[in-house]
Image (cartoon, rainbow, N blue to C red; front, side, top):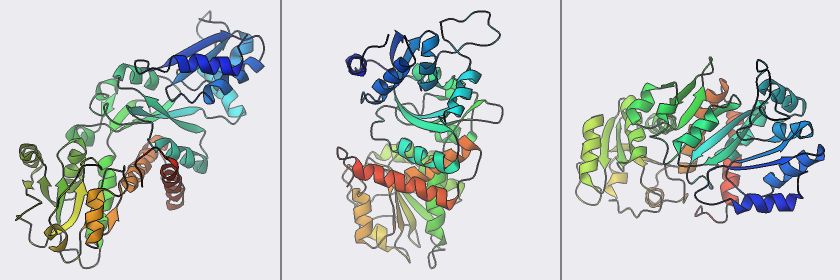
Length: 383
């Protein structure tokens, strides 16, 4: 049978090491209660890595229903099962639906993911939408581990973060033109035929902020945007700026990187801590793409050269009050926090995952869940 839950928890924790991506524990069930013991042990272990927990035998069938990662399945066309108690995908889904459990699973892939708010966002949104889905973390930096998860018929979609954004494209059936130009996939979803598609929703969230910046009364003339940074996030920002037909300006501590990005996306570089080639009419928006904890010494003229103070759009969400946000607020700028960008890109992902629109009320529920999550993460630098 299955040992006491405390023994199973200790066993799982024993293998929770940096070099381990997935933990698997297998026992033989003597009764159905063993499956409940096993499921409880996994959920209360405190381990964030994916755990495959199975109880063999006919009495252990429920463990295959309750397991949430890479459940081995059989097929009705096979003459024999690979293991006693093994079930088809259809059998598992039917039992999960009858029990009110999710039948499709979504994940955030990357390392680290322990502070990701994506589970809070989607697990607030899915019930509001009335869909039997669940979202979890899958911490790994190995594309092969991702491939094993996304090949499951129960996989619905996923978010991709560092260091995998540039590595998952070969695992997919297709990648959108947007993601190809940006050079990063942050979203995996299934199309109408069940094929895996990669795209990028970061730029869509930034587009939303930029449209607001240019729609404000008295600021329609300002069409220039300054992107601070020249890394992967900056590429999404540059793409959003050019997609809207706006004038792109860049700054980076290493000027050669800014020059390279400006050349690729049709922009120009400036300095931010001295005399500048600030565009006539000033900036409609400033987009921060550097790490939130990095010091940033910016000239006040960046905030005062336009008819209205520019909108500050921050992509870093830890801490909430980054140096750029603080500087912008001191000059009366409206600020779009990194948390808001995170939520907006997540809402765009949800549209793709579910093939449905997300209403303002549904987005509000997700927003409240994300902010509540970060307020409760005492170990984070969120303030």
